[in-house]
Amino acid sequence: MRGEPSCPKCGGRVRAPGLFSDTWQCAVHGTVYPVQPVTPPSVEGLGVVVHRTQVPVWMPWPLPVGWLFTGVAGAGDDRSGGRASAVACSGPGPLGGVGELILVAEELGVGLGARYAGIEGPDPGPCLNVEKPPDAKVLAAGRPTPLWHVSGVPADRAVFAGEACGLWLWAVVWPEQSGLLMYDELVLADLRDAGAEIDLVPCGALSPRLLQP
Image 1 (cartoon, helix red, strand yellow):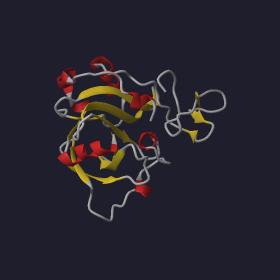
Image 2: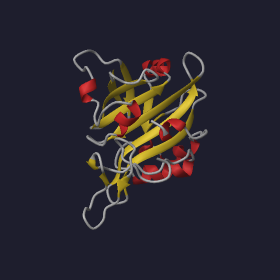
Image 3: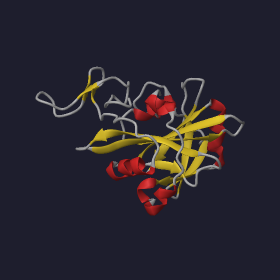
Image 4: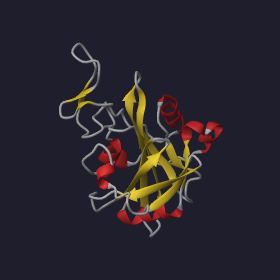
């Protein structure tokens, strides 16, 4: 995933637009928005993604104490712009050890969030019980945003999903116990609106979770 574009749904190779198709093609999923190579954590790399994307680039802001930005990925190309963004952060887990979080914003049907969640995609709707009260709430771009547990995910992670700014918002947390982080009513900023504050983002080492969902 780091070296060349891939399918957001399965991670497989994709065929670039050419003579027979004007869209990116996955042999399994057909037309897709390709996932571009992962951008290692740096203020400059984050800025490139922020300026290209058509969707929010969510990050807890301020970051929880001791947490660092650990990379960003996105789906789309120069022609379509970014149609999904995935921001990774890591730091001290609520119950000790290291916690990791990937926040995904994406348009309907892209499938990148489901890939990190470890479920069949592309969207979380079938795995959400929105008839019951939300399991967590965040403040996304200043708006209270309910999130529900996503069912059927691997046991090593906790996954929440909901809708923010008319798009899917996924929060994927490792290990599963670090899902407690989502009960603290995190404040999420869209880094497209951060301005000069983006220069203050503390950077850590690249998260392997972005490379191996």
